[in-house]
Image (cartoon, rainbow, N blue to C red; front, side):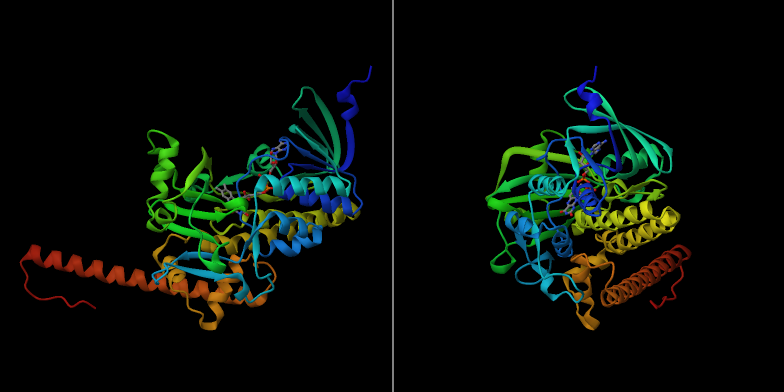
Length: 446
Ligand SMILES: Cc1cc2nc3c(=O)[nH]c(=O)nc-3n(C[C@H](O)[C@H](O)[C@H](O)COP(=O)(O)OP(=O)(O)OC[C@H]3O[C@@H](n4cnc5c(N)ncnc54)[C@H](O)[C@@H]3O)c2cc1C
């Protein structure tokens, strides 16, 4: 007798595991290249996800996918990102229309559950066999062009898929990276996020109303993201030790945390938390020692995750998936080129991430704080930073050269600060020594 599960047993050329932005992008494009694609998502769309602020460089990609109009219809217009400053209004806007590379002059902010559903439905409409409520529970690779995958359906039962190629887009579940022991946690950059959705929070005035606002505080940083229907996503990314201090109700802890920054405190005076619902999520950064091998590749958060201060996650996930789809299609046509295609893909993805990472991991340093508070546009450096914030980090030589100069200035400022600290420390030690020996000779500060 044939059971329903036997009927689901499938053979395909490409199996994409995970129906978030990375998986749906890869599935759409590979289907368009003529591949027989199965896309599996363990949840049912629409499902909650954090990560609502998109970057301008996402827009050309939406256009290539054929979803730009849908994003435009569901999103809040995002003209820029603003950061605290010591000026009269208290912030500086890094407006995307001042970017020097090839990024569009704005982006959008979206409800992720609607956005992810739209991308998933689009993959299905393109022709991918897209299944929801289907979780991959085991992967066994037989050889470079054959993997057996066990799938559990959420209404009971399991079945098997045999695929020539596997694209792992399982997000922070990191299915293959964990299974193959490739995952490297970044111990220096561990953090956790606490957030909620609010009504009644104060918007920036005028044309800045759709900005994402970023604030620093002693334990990390905070975001305010305007979403459709007058809702604002507000949260804080904090070091785990701070989050562990919390006693009492999580909802009270969220309010207390947000009030630690005077700017945020003022903007949430009239706000109310929708449904009293607060979410907490681990947020540490990681990557994998490899991005792929014969017959498999990882995309999006399944490969690596960076702290989300510059809203880079969805763009990195989708652009990486677009490049991976090209590489997989070519590898299936010309297996001899597979390893060089994967190496090129990984090099490109790591280079883009490293360019973001330089800014992210120094974000709370006093020098970076000063550079964002009082940006100078000498040699178009400020505009280069705007292009970075727009996600234009892969192919614009003009932007990359400005970012190199920015880095140089940062390093020189850090060296200058270190030299000052070192001189002062030496002076204090000499003073202490003189007092101890009863000497009277003054020591010059050099
Ligand atoms: C606090 C916080 C704030 C953020 N803010 C932003 C932001 O403002 N802008 C931004 O661009 N990014 C942001 N990000 C990052 C962003 O959320 C991710 O980078 C992005 O969602 C990655 O997309 P993805 O497709 O790789 O993974 P995901 O979107 O996580 O999708 C993975 C999918 O795989 C499915 N899955 C997992 N395991 C299996 C399995 N075994 N079988 C089948 N399906 C499976 C999951 O259910 C999920 O739907 C933020 C992240 C955090 C933690």
